[in-house]
Amino acid sequence: MDRIRIVGGNPLNGVIPISGAKNAALPLMIASLLTDDTLTLENVPRLADVEQLIRILGNHGVDYSVNGRRERQGEGYSRTIHFTARHIVDTTAPYELVSKMRASFWVIGPLIARMGEARVSLPGGCAIGTRPVDLFIDGLKALGVEIEIEGGYVNARAPNGIQAGAYEFPKVSVGATHVLMMAASLANGTVEIRNAAREPEVTNLADCLNAMGARISGAGTSTIIIEGVSALSGARHRVLPDRIETGTYAMAVAMAGGDVTLEDTNANLLDSALDSLRAAGADITPTNSGLHVRRNGAGLDPVDVATDPFPGFPTDLQAQFMALMTRARGTSKITETIFENRFMHVQELARLGADIALSGQTATVKGVETLNGAQVMATDLRASVSLVIAGLAAEGETVVNRVYHLDRGFERLEEKLTRCGAVVERISG
Ligand code: UD1
Image 1 (spheres, rainbow, N blue to C red):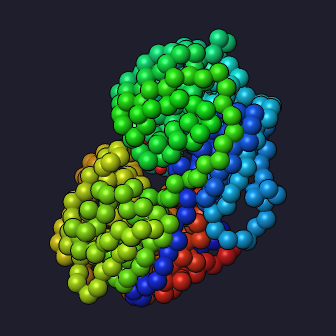
Image 2: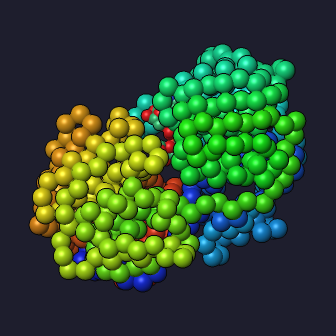
Image 3: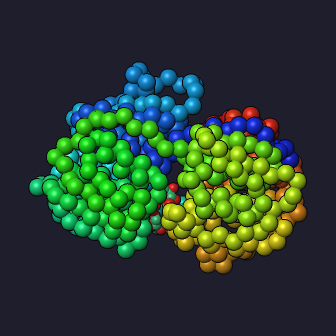
C-alpha cells in the first residue's frame, strides 16, 4: 500500500491548479443514465472514485470515451469524458459495487425514472457514521415509487413512472436531493422539493439536467421545483471547481506559511471557510480565476467553527481546519453537526503532538508550539489530507499510511504541493 512521506518546515510558494469537484462529477456522471444520448462532461478529475463509478456505470450499460478515444493514463489534469447509456442493460446495483462507494447508491434515481424499476444494494456502514438512506426512500415514496427492502437491497418499482408530488426533507441531504432531482426530471407532472440541499454541487447538477432538457428551477435555494419532461437529451457540461480541494490548499498555505495562487476555482464557493481562515490570520484575496492565499510570519489565531450544510462551514473541511488549529496561539472549539463519528483524525493528530480533547460532537483544540513528525494512518478521505497539512508544519518526517483514501478525492496531491516547495513524496508498495 502506498504511503506519503512529508518533511515539514517549508513554506508553500507558487500556483496550484484546482481540479473539477469530485462531489459534482459523481452525480453528473450518474445523470448520464437518464438519457440514451451522449452526456459530455468537461473538467472531470482523475480520481479513484471517478474510475470506480465508471466501472459501476458500465455495469448498467454506460459506455464512455475520453476526449473521443479510450482512456490513456498519465496525461494532463482533469479530462473531458463522454458518457452514453444507449441501453440500460441491468437495473441492479450489486452489493460488491455499492459497498465500495456510497455515492453509487444514487443510481437508484435515474434507473427508477427511466426504467420504472431498480434494485440497489444498501451501501452498508461507513467510517464516518451510520449514514442511513431513509431520506432517499421517503422522498422517492412521495413521488409514487413503491419500495421494499429485502435481503440488503432496496427494490424500487414505478410501473407508471414518477408521479407529481411534494417532499419536504426533515434533514438536509446532498445525496437525497441529487436523487430526487434526477428522478423528478422525468416525472409525470410537477415535483416540489422543500428543505433541499443548497450545495453548489446541487446547482451544478440542476444546470446540467436543464441543459439536457429538464425544467428545474430554484436549485441553490431550499425549494426546488421540477416540471417533469418525457425524455432528456444529451448535453455538454462543465464540472464546477472543487471547493473542498480549494479550501484544503488554502488551509495548507495558512499552516505552512507562504504565498500561493489557487487557480481555476472560485472563492464564492467557500465563503464560510475562507472567513474562518481570515479570522485565523490568513490573507485571502479573490482573483479573476481563483484566489490568492498568503500567510507571512505572524502566528495563527484560534477560531471556533461548527460544520453546517451549505452555506455553512463544510464538514469536508472540518479535519483540515482542526489540523490548522493545532498550531494556533490559543484554544479553539470545533463542532461537527453533520456526521456523528467524524473525528478519527483526532487520535492521529495527537500522534504528531496535537492537544485535542473530545467531548460529544465538539473537539477542544489547544494550540501547541510545535508538532513532531510521526507515522500516522489515513482513516478517511478528508481525515487523511488533514494529516498531510499537519505534516507540512511538523518538525521532521511524517509518514501517512493507507493513502488510497487520498487518491479517492485529491488529484495529484503530492505533485501540486511539491511544485510549491513542499517536501512530499509517494512511497510505493
Ligand atoms: C455528500 C458528500 C460528502 C459530504 C456530505 C455532507 C458526495 C459524494 N459526498 O455526502 O463529501 O460530507 O455530502 O456535505 O457528494 N442522512 C440521513 N438519511 C439519509 C441520507 C443522509 O440521515 O437518507 C444523514 C447523513 O447520515 C448525514 C446527513 O444526513 O448525517 C448529511 O448527509 P448527506 O448530505 O446525505 O451526505 P452525502 O450526500 O452522503
